[in-house]
Amino acid sequence: MIPVLLAALFVALPPLQAFAIYFVCVHAPTHAAGVIDDPVLAPRVTDGRSAVIRALPITLITVAIGMALWPLYTGAVPQRLLAVTLQMLAALTLPHMLLEAALERRRRARIVRLAV
Image (cartoon, rainbow, N blue to C red; front, side, top):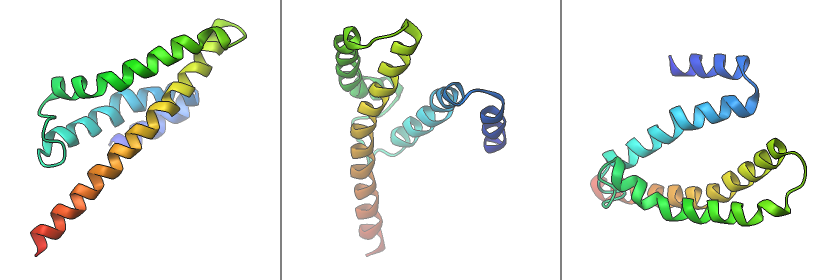
């Protein structure tokens, strides 16, 4: 059902709006729930509150960098906001992917231990 709704969303809306809705309504909650539900992968992330607390520092640093760079952007405010938002999302993607890689290594190690 969700893939059909997402396909309709991406057909009906401009790409950035569709991506934003997908990211906020599907990707982030699904990812957070997966981390919360598996105490071995991230033992200090036990609920939504602890997930937010763990994510907040890198998010605030990224926002601060974006605010510091804001004066360097030119053009109308919507274009400047779009540019800084996309660059900040790109900046958050690297730590996110590093976290995912570390979690995947833990998953694989746990599977190997259980199989032995």
